[in-house]
Amino acid sequence: EAAAAGAKGMHSASHIAPVNALDMGIYPNPTTGPTRISVTLPANASVSMSIYNAAGQIVYSESGKIYSQGYQIINWDGKGNNGADVESGYYYVKVSAGTLTSVDKLVLMR
Image (cartoon, rainbow, N blue to C red; front, side, top):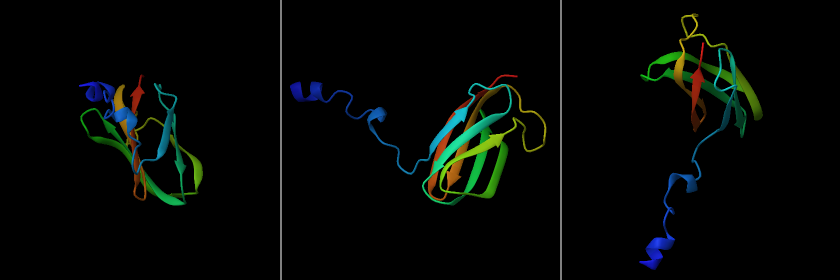
């Protein structure tokens, strides 16, 4: 019982390092429109970014742009693939470069 008590929290997600994840940040967040997605790339890579609404539908995507190794900024103007402003709400930003992927939440307040 003492060993079990000492191991409490040992297997929580906060103690697990992400595997195959990019170092990613979103600023400002929450935002009223344009936002910057920062990523740190371990090597030159073709980067893709998709933004999903809370229902899991893609509202914006871009891919195929080559970014250099290191700290990079991807600007998003708050518009969907159709060119119209995206509505207020919760969104998920997914950035992939090679085998590395990260997802983070974005709050948009118009």
